[in-house]
Image 1 (cartoon, rainbow over the protein chains, first blue to last red):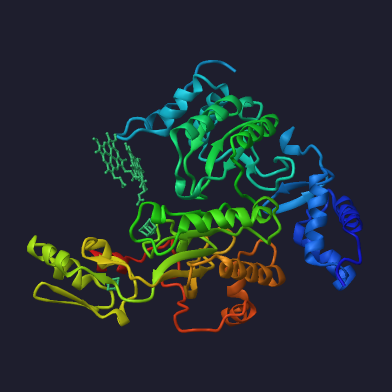
Image 2 (tube, rainbow over the protein chains, first blue to last red):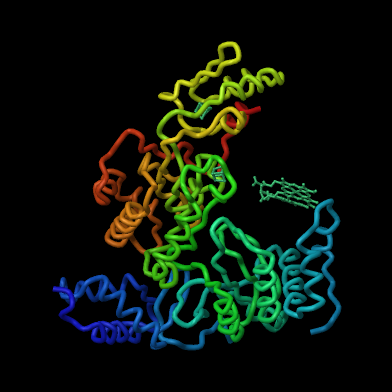
Length: 82
Length: 394
Ligand code: HEM
Ligand code: HEM
Ligand code: SF4
Ligand code: SF4
């Protein structure tokens, strides 16, 4: 059932995924959601994942980026800005 | 940055009979150094026949994944004024109605924080602010929201919904395009500001098949007004057209694509069962003919410009839908997004997803029954115009 894993925990795990792939692969909202639903099955819903992403973005832990499609990233200065 | 500005190639564009954007830019360049470098870089692009912009990246407003398009020069040493030149999309009012006070406020905000250059409007629908630096993004946003404006969409999100003037100005409107645009914009704020889709999703609303927003060619989802019953006829007004000497046969009867109009004396007869709602007769005889009374909208899915795959026209998914309330529309939109989320691939628009998976699967997936009026796109590529088509016309 959805709701068994807390939004905070989903957010933390998503953050870890983004951190681990930084500099290698750009992850999108759909990638993070699919990772969570395939790990937890129906213990997490898509809405839980949306809420977790919202939490990551609104707290400033993650930001959105755009590289031919929207991605979710850890805030950093990037090459084109320097 | 030296003060002299030599742009011999751009100057050519000022020589024609029409006002040129070069003139606008030069005017602005006297106030804004960044516009001077914009002109210099553009001149170099014209000379070298290549663009020097990089775009994308991490710039944005806190909490927002859309509305700011990061843009940088590839030559910051040569053109430091445009080392950042980000675009902001400002969500336009339904039907593009502004007061001059509102426009003045917008221009003041942009004069204070950016290049002062505007694009009103881009084909996205938004009012576009062209060119500012990263540090000015948040202050611009603060001033915009203080005046009740918000950013529009960009990236893999719901793009700013847009519509024609509809019933505000136009007697052809078969539903309230402005109200639906307003409704969808507010209902789907999360989808608009927090990119969560495979790719962009554009919804455009036109009040009738004249399709002034070009929804059938330019939106993933076109909501186009249409009627079900008979075209309304004012025979007295028709008789006046006949009396005025207008060539009714040549300009109306012969041009009806399904040949369903006939004229007896000063009376027009329309075989409505064969009318395909092309709007031609109504546009030509606006005083005598009017759209029917049983009004609603048709929904097309899948149009797009040729970016990743080729261009597509939309296909009619729903031939007629009542528009008394918008709940059925919300329901349809959400079922489509759910399907796309489930089956779509990264960077795949809904139209491409439907092409790959098959129309039948899609229709079943979103819970529709197939009907013959689900017309496959009438011409394959909206960016290629066949010669035969023009020969026929001329
Ligand atoms: C190179 C010069 C120009 C080009 C390529 C151009 C192109 C266009 C195009 C493509 C449209 C849309 C037509 C449509 O909706 O079917 C348009 C509309 C219009 N243009 Fe131009 N135009 C030019 C110059 C001008 C000038 C000099 C003026 C006025 C001084 C002007 C005034 C308008 C107006 C009033 C509209 C109608 C806008 C509306 O429907 O709301 N244009 N133009
Ligand atoms: C006494 C003077 C004028 C009168 C009575 C007048 C009247 C009108 C009317 C009735 C319309 C149609 C509005 C509608 O579609 O609802 C119109 C449209 C328009 N007028 Fe005028 N007008 C005048 C002066 C001017 C001048 C001086 C200009 C330009 C320098 C101008 C530019 C336009 C344009 C561009 C449109 C099209 C607007 C659009 O497509 O949205 N008009 N005018
Ligand atoms: S699409 Fe139809 S209703 Fe809308 S402005 Fe054009 S003619 Fe009028
Ligand atoms: S709307 Fe088009 S198809 Fe219908 S009667 Fe008029 S011209 Fe013919």
